Structures are given as structure tokens and as C-alpha cells.
Image (cartoon, rainbow, N blue to C red; front, side, top):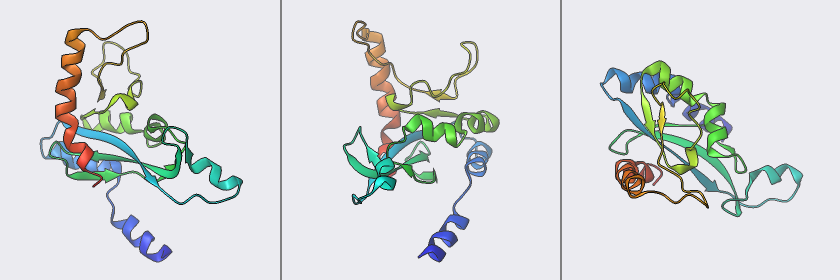
Length: 160
């Protein structure tokens, strides 16, 4: 089994190469999403890191990049289930590699705060607006979120 996994991993594209390929083809944006792949619960302390408090189950988190039509371009290495999507992206240095390739990413609200560049810089990761308890969204922000959701809908099918 390890031999098969090693062979498949060797054939998988590296993140920087996948991004350069998209940029070379004239693409400007990739779609970004993460998903928890459920696993069996095992006993012992070493498996606690695989428990996702958000999903209330054990699993492994993977981050995926797709093109604007939902075709899978790159999948990250599996992280423990307790890892947040932002932490997994920072581990893979996703924003730096997006900037190096001259690309942007469109993501859901789970990625708010991933792109911590200055206010004058072009964002590498575009997310929607998040409402706060004491600050509801304006009509324009809701319309923006709706438009963004329509654009990023194909990434949801990248895991199927």
C-alpha cells in the first residue's frame, strides 16, 4: 500500500508547478476550498488530533484548487482534522505561491484573513463579507456574497 501511495504522490503536480501551468495558459484565478475526509475513530491519544470540533467527527483535512470550471488542479497533503483551512494554506505557503505565479484565488468565508497583505496590495485571496453580531451585512455586501458564491460554485464539485 505504501508503495502505491508513493507512486501516486510522485505523479501528483506540485503546487508551484500547477499554478505556473494555469498562469501560462492565461488563467487569472483559481478556486480554493477545503474539505474534511471522514475517517474511522480510533482509540488512543495519537488520534485526538484527527478530531474536528467543527464537524464533530474524525477525519483528515485536504485543500484543493480547481479552475473556473471545477477541474481539479491540485490537492494538498492530508492534515489532521483539527487543523483549520487557513492553517493548512499557510503551511503550504499558498498566498506566496499565488503571488509568485501572478494568480488570485476565490474562496469561501472559511478563508477570511488568509491574505494578510497591506490595504494597497492586490489581494491574492478574495473572500466574501462576514457579518458580525453587532454589524449586519449591507444590501451591497449581500449582493457581492451572492455573486461570489455563484463564481465559486464549481469548486464544491471538485471533491465529488
